[in-house]
Amino acid sequence: MTILRQWRAEHARRIIYFGKPRNNLVFASEHGGHLSNGTIKGWNKKIAESKGLRAISLHGFRHTHASLCFEAGLTMQDVKERLGHSSISTTMDIYTHVTNDRKEESVQQLAKFMWA
Image (tube, rainbow, N blue to C red; front, side, top):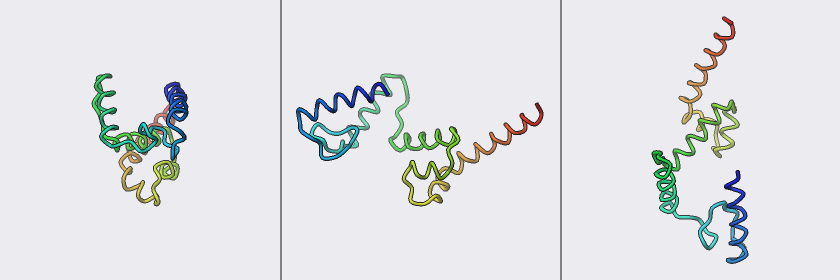
């Protein structure tokens, strides 16, 4: 959050210099437009290398976000809304394996509780 707050302040300074942006993008090009995929991939690769991590695709970030939502206990409907899927069946088709893992964990948790 600190980094995003700092970026918001930097973005405000850029607005003063370049003028009001045409949209509400969090990360925009120097002139307020969309960033190219190559720019974003380059940032991702640079950050991952600097931290000794394997770079993942932008879609990988989306999948990780969905998986973390399920791990946090969000419902399928909640995740559908966050991902912007028009149908819950899309969410279920893509993330069934995550929910199946969660179901197994729930069964184990219940069994542990029952035997305690």
